[in-house]
Length: 144
Image (cartoon, rainbow, N blue to C red; front, top):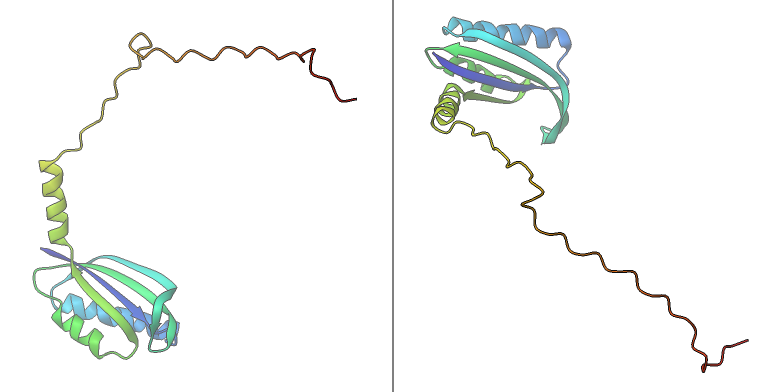
């Protein structure tokens, strides 16, 4: 099974009822292609990094699907929808496999710090002795 993350940004002008119908429609399109929904997150309205179609905000949604096939129909529908400002579909199962493989190959080693032994510590620099206080000299006239 392949794992896909689908992130899309809806226009802020889309009403909440219309947004929920669009989200359910997109889920059904993916499920018709054989994908199963593993996780769904509505991130809500967020500020965009740069203006898209003169909008500075958008409603973010994230889906995580598992599928044997591709999500090309879902991608096509998202491209054709005017209500979706941007979308991105990323296959993440390969990243998880690579991460697991690297974790097995390079297990995290615990760093063991040597115990502090004062006998082995270098000798501390001697503290400077207090300087003697200078007394006024007798042959120098003092200002009155």
